[in-house]
Length: 333
Image (tube, rainbow, N blue to C red):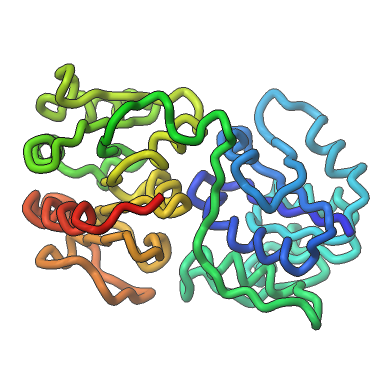
């Protein structure tokens, strides 16, 4: 049995596909399971334990990934993406069963690539559940049912223990591609000062390569003072994952770091404002979800339709209380 899965979206989507990949592995434990990804997420492939191989698409890779798909001898192809590129990959796979979400049927050209459909609607489910539904659509009649939505990444041995950072530290990731998700720089500085003074933790601020995101992090007071806080811009996604995995607590806005932290069960505080946490929130028991639309206390109920609000409505005091509650819990390996 040879199975090809295609997840050609961003980091968060890839991480939230890991429960579906785990379900496929459980259903066909002897199968060869390969995952097609874009080059921006490819460095995470070695951290996904369900896989045997990966196929990397992207600019400059030429015909190579398409040839890997065409010559793979696939029995089953699952398209988690639903784009022109993934539909082309599904067609070239020539798998006997080629499954996608029903929503793809709206594009009749793409729809010709598939012969099986999953009725799951992303607006009605957490993203991890949505992807797990696609895997369940092709589960063998006697195969095990899967309902575990926790994402899963495993660091390669050379990165375990995060030898690059000595001592306890908190990781704060203020930036993302959407500026409306940004929290005020001064408030990030207040949280960092509290972590240092109340908990004796170093603060590592991480950021992506974008100029605007870098400027946002550099505007945080005291962020670059040696011995207090530092800024890191990991060049490799796996290096960022290692920093996340080793942190005593992770605090971020709604961005890829949310899902990396969830995959390692890292204690985390997530700040939502203009996006709905129903679809993207971490699901483990050491995650606190805050919303600018409900700035009095952490969220405990989540619905497909939830209010949005400007990030400035989230107070420093609320973030600090949430952080203190997580740091009071016993540490886990």
